[in-house]
Image (cartoon, rainbow, N blue to C red; front, side):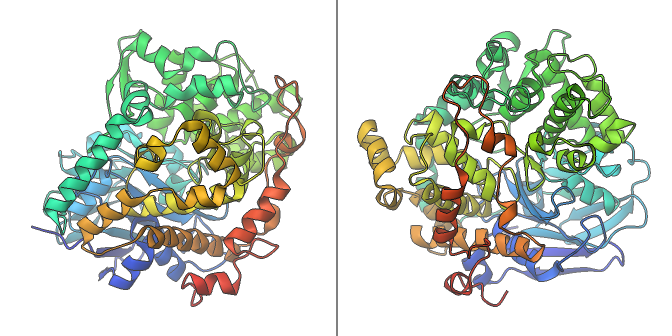
Length: 619
């Protein structure tokens, strides 16, 4: 059957009540889908001051209109909730099979409220939604759980591991070998006693409204992806760890808990070195055109997922450990236990530094991996010092000291890009709604990888952060992969044929003009040919503005103020040990510019004028 792509199912886990409703055309126009619609529904049902681990919290999964359409890289879905790690609204985009399975089971989205009394499994099939006991699954890891569910080729599941069951505040949720990875989504499902959500797909198809035009746009998008050096070569061959050497050469690799930005052994963790040593075959989301995920064969004969850049950056370089075999093993362990590798690496690095300073008693030491696996296990099961580590870096530093080197923003641990070598990224971290996030706006790509912006100037950075926040919010609402921006923006005629020196000069000196020339038309045409509803580039970016501002408004409701839009003291006052120029992040000027461009007041709150411009005044 052909799905209209508009049904959302809401389940009250406490009472068992189930209702369905339709996404209205007005909601689609304003919020697109995915992240945007999920935030809109969260705004309607999340009271201020809600305990994230109570039944009052909502867990919302939402597909975008592109999911299941066959558009390039469209096997993605978004989830939102209130984070137990940050106390703020959190969003996360994920690949893996669940989104497509939910869509082909006939549902655009899923809203969970309340909590089950006992461990439970939620099953979704065409026309049927039911809760089942899951006592036999409780205690299993994510691999064991998915195997026990006997998933077919058109099925997908969201599952938690022991970390989610035990309320680790940065526990994640697995979908295949992909994850809702940040801010503690696994802990929220664990608090609701939901071990797994299973979607049995295959009953419905997402057929584009204009099939022939859609195929033409899809072909053009694929050409762009295949031609781009990042999406068609670097990530396709080496995965995201393929850009590790770029980060190390530019001094933004977070060595020893962000004490330095490079290390002579770092190449051992690169995607190129891992592919040479372990081989590599695609292991990706379906459908995917970029193919950034890979598996390799390790010395013990095991087939393992080759770690992504964030994982080798935080579980490797951040700990001063450059053994890819060890990092791949820890990556696999985190996946099975249901732990976010970024926050896990961050809290391990903090613990190592706190131990060196005498703040905690621990066998963990920078450059020594022999106790790391045991520490990860203790963390997931909340044993010993692991019980404190499970609270996250911010809470741990508040209890034992060391807040100056607690490398987090708003409670969310920083990804593997040191902003002292990428000042625009520093602003993006500081203002990101969910906390320390590289996927809110990736300025490091422009400043470091592409050389289109000077990484050591504040000029224009607020404009670029605002633009990419809005664009990425729209992309996560369509939903498709953020990596497509390399291809769709850089392979568009203006960017492709303008000489790089002229392009860089324009972007650095005339940022407002450069941004007006950014071509995001492929996203608009994909949306239009799938939904049958026209959208201009300006309307797409305004929808992104609306989504970001709504997310900010929800966080203000939860207590967010200007003091939260900052960086760890280390990044503001202490230079990298390998930087002879002693540079730190000059945040304050960029922050003022950002507030002005967003229409926020001096405390970072959206003004009534900004809300009215975006149609949010009624919220």
